[in-house]
Length: 208
Image 1: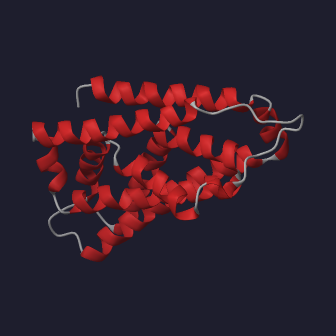
Image 2: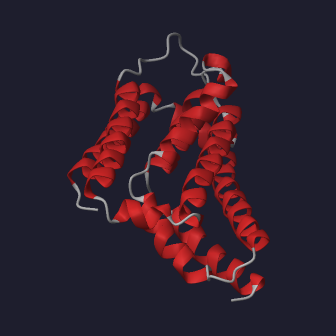
């Protein structure tokens, strides 16, 4: 498959996967609504960087090993599901904003690097990613694929991931939309926290 055809195929499949509701979407929404646009964009950057982990091991053929190893797969599922539940628990602890005027919490509540790391770990510890990337790369990777094409594929997927979530962040950052969400206050954080815990439990209880 030539480079352009591979990019078109990756774009169509990966955009659908990125747009599907999941822990990344919940986390970006939560960070944007709680801490503002900057936090949402930093978290989106972390998620995009987290893709590098999956891209690297998939390119090296390690994903096939993981997919066929019950112990490694269980470890990934345990780490990923446990981390999602932890994120959900943090959301459940959210408290009502003091005062009569609702405001977005300051983005510097968590350092920039910690916010990026939050998104990075959410994506890197996603236990369903190995199977997804094995299937995806099987479509475009061949034994004679030039290394530079593989690098381009990986960078392009990270750009797609960041672009999608940045779009989500900007939509949620619009004053009218943001005010509507802010009226829900800490209850929205708790609902998103429950959603994250549910995703974590689903991961732990599902058969991969």
